[in-house]
Length: 593
Image 1: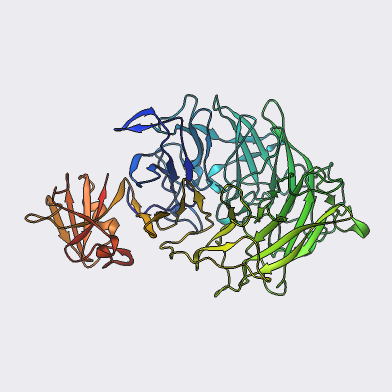
Image 2: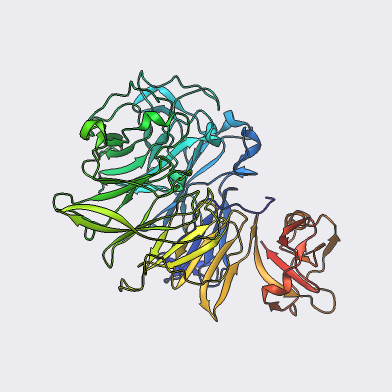
């Protein structure tokens, strides 16, 4: 496997019931970091040392050359964040690939894998192919070759759920939700968001219609507060006209584009809509794509956020410049408010609406010290903080603070994440990953109308639509340039697990040994040297190393007197790609299978 791994799925931090000792499962409580790439490689890392405990390519990935775009390249595999069932130490992933040796989008599909978290062996009954007619419209057939599975997976009542949108965001953006039994691997449900005679005719191609209602949510998963329901937000579609009839929330339409939807999941695993909300001015958006589908729904903790007659609250925000506070048990329908407006608890206009203000992902909440929500809109130079309140028993939020960022936020910004120390007031921190600014952090409680920035080391890497994940006093970030990066309290230094290259993982920066060199079985040099070029040249060896920008060395073992040193000694840019590092003078960046 060639090329630096691309991580779009978020890494998972997990402590299994068993762990590895000397390469074999044994009882214990070692914490792990699990990451799956777009090349369908899964890596199980020691959360403390960064050592690769196990790795496996679960199937050949889909080639981006089969697409009419180049959003994720060179391959598409696991994009939606996997989910772990702690009762069985099983990780579930929806992987894109081919059904046989033939390539092309017509031979591609999605396959649900269930793997033992330690051995990475497939569970009985898996993998499962996602395909077939829709439960709610048998005339519509799911073809994984033209769709992209983006939202994080969710297990509800024994069913692992995955949402789909259009590959490349092309016109066939019909949304789908698939559900597979976690025990048997049986495909239990396949739901399409545009159904019935009102939906545009569907075809088998990228430009052949099918409507909209894409389920992508910038990678955010389906929230659920009970075992019999979950929620999703549908993307825009083509029904931008006045023929969309007002209806109560408990009478969902067959076209669920631009909607927040409450989905029922019955005892058989089948799903169906039972409540919804669509903004009253949705038809006015036209083809601007200013809909809710770029953001997922955030369920607020009812122990801290509620009202006199409203017990369960949620926040929806997308690309139309508004934040909606909704009643989770009565979403609001379509044009059910005064004079045909929204029947929601609150619709807040985001400041800066004169610019193109867009929300990707979702908001984050901090329940302590009065309660807050946070978001970082694309197009602005700010993080916004809203405080919770009540008036006559009715809940609402008001803008209380923002930041002054050095650059506007770009598409690809991650969702804010809030942490605190053992739930103690005064310890809340807001964390956000930004494509330009990297990892940023702020005190959760504003001071004098400002979110106070916390100084942290710079992030080396490109985190698109990522969020930090947390372990035992450590923070982990996955990037689209192949890195799993760890922040931890180790003499205030940044700990890094360097790029994972195909089947190889970075071992660190090593000195050359004397005599003979650290790796001595094969050597080459090139003015086009990159880490990938060296990996390909050394694919028959256990180790490879890059040195001084243009040199490559291979070997089946590392010389015993080669010494591990700090990474700055291996900071010379690769001759063939200045964004990569190819060792230093008499120092190698070493990789191992």
